[in-house]
Length: 76
Image (cartoon, rainbow, N blue to C red; front, side):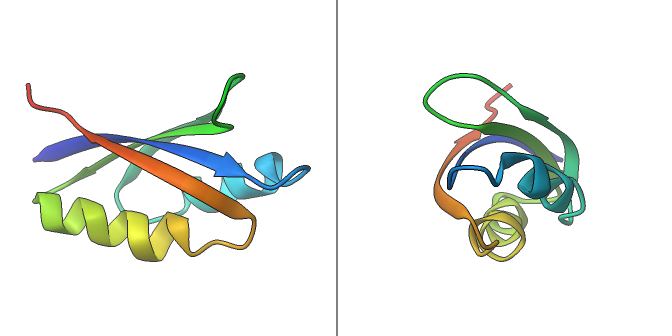
């Protein structure tokens, strides 16, 4: 299994709605609203890096209100 953390920047006032939508995305294990440069931290797990990136592209990045994402793949 491949695990990744995805940082999500949202449009003003959309973080709470997007939190629920991110939690429903395929492969998402956990998601939290955080303070800082990004608004959400999403933890995802899939069988391959390709599946992680597909989940981010179709399940998170394309959500209305998402303005930026950064993905970090766990090496250990």
